[in-house]
Length: 238
Image 1 (tube, rainbow, N blue to C red):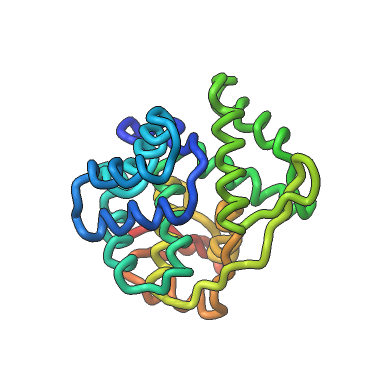
Image 2 (tube, helix red, strand yellow; image 1 turned 90 degrees about the vertical axis):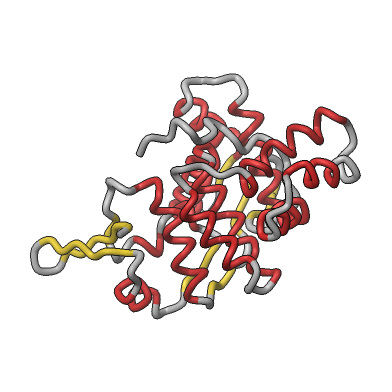
């Protein structure tokens, strides 16, 4: 997928869920982005910090990117009809779709959590520096992602620089479940995922899907099933 219109890094500030919720509300209500900036000026000290946080939240919810507009449109519909506690699913999925660094970082986290039950911040920073050719801004941005996810209560710092996952967030609403998978698979359009692995994508580590997940995928018009041989089935976006 051509990602030329999407931010290269994007997620490089600490973000509270309250700020993300406000930006989502602005997008749902079709308010102008300047209202978000005015509100952030009352929440964040320092003009530069407020501006950079605004840029991130604007790219998360208020700005339309051709590559992810379909996902964003569905998210705004879902956002007006879900429980407040479920909004983290929308923020997570939209960050995966719009911000390559967020997707790469959470994928690396998820792999390490699965393999060894935790991860070290410096290891994640090093991995992302390698992915992004040692850009000097990457370690700081990764640190801000980790800081945000701690405040989102999806990871917990056990001791200095070492983190574990918290209790899984169960997704019960079929539409929300389907949307999150779409947001994640949007960066994998040319990479079919085994139907047995799609619920274990590492970047989705904070979420627990209902047992009827396969049924939802098979009945949804948003996904297609590719069969290879007698027993191999793969999921792609329709």
